[in-house]
Image (cartoon, rainbow, N blue to C red; front, side, top):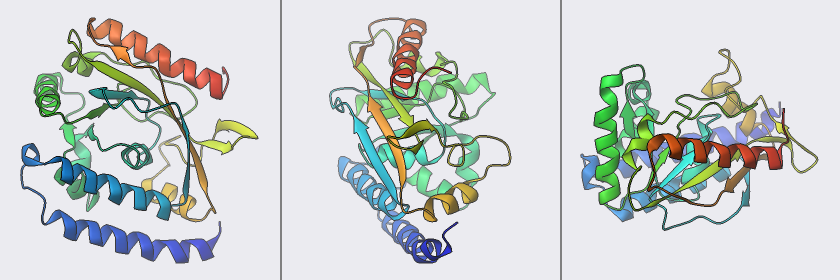
Amino acid sequence: MNFILIIFRFPLVIFHVSAGLIILIFFPSKNINLKPIHHMISCIWMKILFKIFGFKLIKIGKVDLDAKSYISNHVTLFDIIVINSIIPVNFVAKSEIKNWPIIGHLSAKTGTIFINRGDSSDNERVIMTIQSYLKMNKKVVIFPEGRIGDGKTIRKFHSKLLKSVSDKDMKVQPIFIHYPKEYPIDNQNDQSICWSDKTQTLLKISLKCMSRWQTNVIVKFGNSINCNQSEYSLSKESFESVSNSRNELVGRN
């Protein structure tokens, strides 16, 4: 671990997060009142944080700006920084994050939709919230695996939240996100960056990133999918798209 890089980057992270907290003072108290300018500010803030942590983006495919929502696999909390550094979007996240120091406040003030995992009665509220966001032309990223994976495989996509976009005249775009060990020599998954087991923590992953000259991340945007189908069909088609992207770039297990 390169401690010189950590000593250099850690104060930059603290300063940048502190600046973010100050900026949020001027954000609306209610998410529904967030304007495009607020989402653009969040996107720029994420771009800078992305650079401070030393990420290098390998972007494949084009972002479909006409897509109303994006469907992605999920391997680490840094996925949010990575995706939001490319496009101004809102995320659906587990409700526990709302109570995390600093991160919870940053998430809540920038339009994150929180869901109580394991509480099926909360699904309808979240679906209605997503739909209200879409009506206001706010784009939403859904992680249909339901939880962070280990990066080795793509978990089954759950269809419940896709009900918010299914059977409608709109498009969603699948996203495959991957952290290779040494691109392009070794595209296998870098387990030190992913939420590979219960011993992994956000602090450990953050220090690992800050100790490197750079951390590569592949983001592949697939072909957009029409939503005029059931949530089950949409779940299956988006899962196949993300899985195919993984097989093309990483190979089959």
